[in-house]
Length: 106
Figure 1 (cartoon, rainbow, N blue to C red):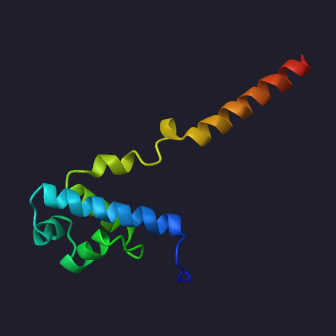
Figure 2: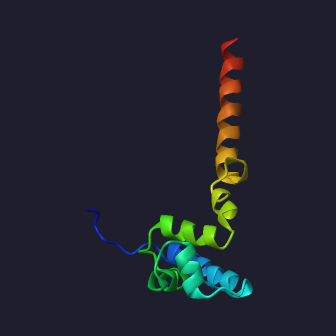
């Protein structure tokens, strides 16, 4: 079993915002907590924990709630390689170095 820990403040803030956004999305759709919980195959208590940004709830349950709200596509975009500015920059720099090294060998 993993050691319990408290995630960094940035993680907790991000989850709190996600929880607020999920709550707002549910309200905009005029859906009750009971309906969303049923559609996500979870309990109202767990939905409340998600809307509170609880980091102890699994990402799978967060995903089920997003799916119940019709927002699952946003989850699949989170770590999209084409939007990874740091990763793209690092890859670009590595490719430049590789070309430079190949040019020196010739």
